[in-house]
Image (spheres, rainbow, N blue to C red):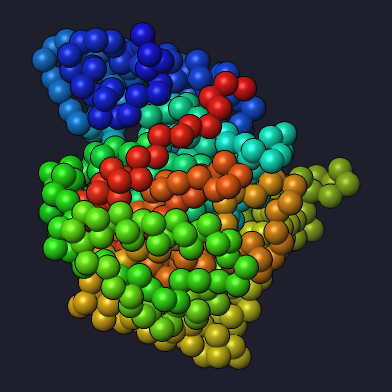
Length: 497
Ligand code: GLN
């Protein structure tokens, strides 16, 4: 039998329905793969026993004649989603040992639909990063290797690096991710999988550890467009517990997948180019446009004039909101509290306890963002920075609104490079440049999907991104399916350690 963990969700569901294998067998194959590739560091908290128990329950339900969209499908959960009774860390020391007494709305929806959870996936600390090297629980490794330096460990991208690495290495059939400025799409591109950031408000944020509340959005990561459609159908939905959740019906996202792109208009924004972008990224972008043209789409050049302002504005808005959201980690309410200094029984003051706990509990990148955020929100600078960034944000959103009067979807590269080495990681602003093509859609709140379209000359996956109208995930998935069919991306990383 083919290794069950390598099946897509759609294929595994069909196999389960026909009784070709059980949910326990399927889950066991994932658990075996997780053991085999623990070197990837993809999981912070694997929960194999709970998973096998849940798989048995799924098998029993199926025997009793029940069915559900994800009955018996093993998934990984980014460790930013609170899971009842299972440690939730956000990859931070400050949340070590935090065991939520509640379940996030998105994971509740997945459980309602029969999913089996394999455990909690690694990420950048508090989802801040593009390389998954800021986790307190260690780096995540990309299962792909480059042809020229096969011994060099590559980053999986971030912040949903554990999700991307686990899905690419076939440790799970699909995973949840979250995307604030690109954290689903960029790691999907680096690991050769498909990841969808829905419209802001489509999936509930309730029970997800907050980074930047006006940008955070949960979404699916999987090995096909169809699998993302299946997962989104389960994850999405109105939730009264999230005041920014939008009450609009959840369609069957798989229904329109085969509808093709004939007669659709696709825009290529001329601003989506950066200095030193490798020629092969431009080529793959043009090739992808040609694939859509070949299937009957009309491809036109468009302009999104405020693109260049998106990244600087994001790095004001996101840290500002983060500094406010992270104020709650004070050593009193959650997880970690520092010890009093030098064997003293207690701290000299409450403030001393806060400061020591936060100094020891947060990593360097998180501290940097808290400081930037506190600065741009401070009395003398609020107008100059934060309010200005908010105005820029409106302009970015308006660019997209105007573009979607002309075109049905927008096609861009996902990232300006392929995955880089863990040790050759760029620093500071250069690292922030990774998100240059993903951040604008986050600022505008519109949906975006990244799918693998080809390999770099060095044998690494490259992604292309499609952006769509707010709440038109159906249309976006339909174009993505057409592109997936044309690209015929079947390469896989080496699956054994
Ligand atoms: N890399 C970006 C950042 O560090 C985006 C992260 C994300 O989307 N969570 O802010």
